Amino acid sequence: MTEVVLHVYDVTNSGSDKTNNTILQINKIFKDGIGLGGIFHSAVQVYGEEEWSFGFCEQGTGVFSCPSRKNPMYTFRESLVLGTTSCSIFKVNQILRELSREWPGSSYDLLSKNCNHFCDEFCEKLGVPKLPGWVNRFANAGDTAMDVAENTAMRLRQAKTEIVSASKVAYRFLLGVTNNIRNDLDSPSNPNRGGSPRFQGTWFKNLITTGAKPSSSSEVQNQNGDEQLQQTQEDGGRALLRHNSSSHDSSRGGD
Image (cartoon, rainbow, N blue to C red):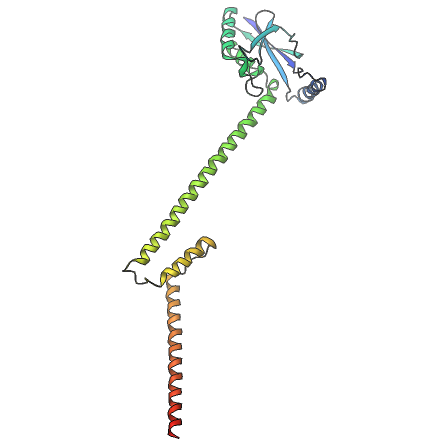
C-alpha cells in the first residue's frame, strides 16, 4: 500500500501579471478567507516522484506527468494526503494507460472535463476519496448553471410546443362547433330555419371577440314574444287610424 497525494496549484498561466494577481486574490479571498474555493489546478502523486494530471492539447492524450509540486505553468499552493491505495505499481500503470486513451487532450473543457475531474476519476480508480469540494467548486458551479440554463431552455421549447398544439386543438374544436351549428340550422326539420342563423352567427362572433354569452332559449322566446306584441300593437294602431279616417270622410260626405 502507498499514499495518494493531491497537489494543488493556483492557476497563474494567463500570460498577464495583472490577471494572475487577480486570480491569486480571488483564491485568497474565496478559499483562504471564507473556504468556498477558487481557481485551481490539481495533480495526483502515487508511487515515485511524478504527479499526474490532465490538460488541453490538439492531438494525442491530455494525460501528462511532471516532477511533483513543480509544474512550471502554475503556482504551487499545498499538498493533501487523500488516503492509501492497495493497487500495485503495475495496476497503477495499467490505470494510467486506460485513462490516457479515455482522456484525449482535445476533449478538455474548463467546466465539465478539466484537470480536477481527471484527478477525481483517477482517485476513484485508486480506491481513495475524491478531491475536497473546494478544489473544483467554481467549475462545478459553472457546470450546474449551464445544466440549469439548458434544462430551462428545453422546458420553454416544450411549453411553446404544447401551447401551439393546444391552440390548434381549440381552433379545431371551435370550427367543429360552428359547423355543427350551421348544419343544424340549415336542416329542413329545424323550426327556426331562416331567422335564427343571424342570431347564432352574431353570438359566435361575440363569443370569440368579446366573450359574450348566448341568450337562453327562454330569453329568445321572450324576445320573439315581445316583438310579436309590438307588431300587433302597431297593426292595431294603423287599423284604428284607417277606421277614424274613413268615418271622418263619411261624415264630410253627408254634409
